Amino acid sequence: MNRRKFLTVLAAGGASLTLSACDRMPDSAIEPWSGPAAGETDPRLRALSWALLAPNPHNLQSWIADVREPGAVVLSIDLRRLLPQTDPPNRQILIGCGAFLELLQMAAAQEGWRADIELMPEGDYAASGIDLRPFARVRFEPDPRRPADPLFHAIRSRHTNRHPYQDRLPELTLLQSLQATAVRPGITVQATTVADSVRRIRDLAIAGYRVEFTTAATWSESVNVMRLGPDAVADEPSGLPVLGAGAWWGRKLGLLGADDLHKTDGMAARYAVDDSIQAANATPAWIWLTSADNSRRTQIEAGRAYVRLQLAATAAGLVMHPNSQVLQEFAQMQGLYRAFHEEVGVSQPARVQMLARIGYAQPSEPSPRRPLTRILRRG
Image 1 (cartoon, one colour):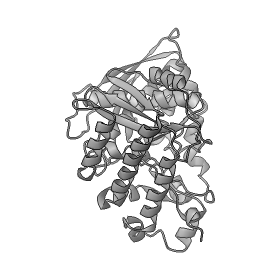
Image 2 (image 1 turned 30 degrees about the horizontal axis):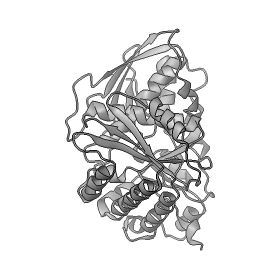
Image 3 (image 1 turned 90 degrees about the vertical axis):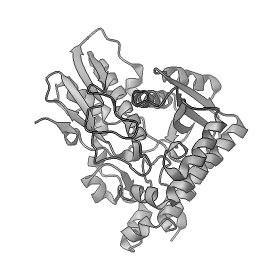
Image 4 (image 1 turned 180 degrees about the vertical axis):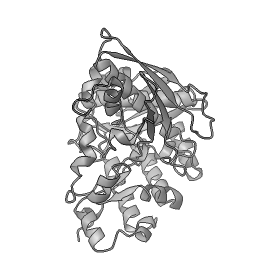
């Protein structure tokens, strides 16, 4: 059996496991990308239908939307959907929540509503972790004169693209326009297409893949949210879908059993590293978001900035792929964390919140999403 067709990339940043097309993505798993349900009139539910398409770590979709209060949505985090090994302080989870909030507000404005956001209405989370308190309360008010955000139209097309990118360099003026679009309080965006800088960041990213994918606890955390085959993806359309010809053969031949998957020197982990390296080697530019501090509110702002950046890139014909490994806070990554921050000239209290590949490539398919009903709290 051809090595390349057995198992390809576990995405850097943990967003998806993509394989050769055989077992296809179930239609039900990507139905949410169609937008609000036909006939839905509640502006909150219509906006939430777009918000749940936000990028988020390991595609866990760790959101709960309480709509019991008329005219409002109270948003909290599903504590069953965290990444304690790769994201021990839950920083990446909050970045995903920020992306969710940005799309929610954008979708509300599209239909003539103002979504007023109050962050941490019951107090800020501790630096060490999150809890059951909401991360935001959003009040909806009619505002037909509120201008729509032009980035709204890119929501449905925004997908993380983990494939190798073309050699073509994004133009500097284009990158500068993307940086301006993504501005949020306390967040700055920088990018490089300089060959030596691109190479040095690439080498650090590759070292990060090796650490995350070959450390037993962090690799097993990814394995635990893999969905093997279309039936599993349809049943739980979150986490890391494992689909394609190689995956089909792997299941049939018994090569994708739990014991095999969890081995850091096993087939799955080896291919995750190999194909992540292949993608990194085909990266013409890197882009990253730096924050002035690392407060919980700043982490949410970083998520809002990141999704705006990716939407603007999508609208401009570019694709992006988060590479979160060298930004993670678990012990084995600390040396690379420091080395990366030194490379980009960022020191405490500032830090880099997001790092991504950016360039040109063929479109990629959407990742699975849970239906809106699974994140709602109504009674």
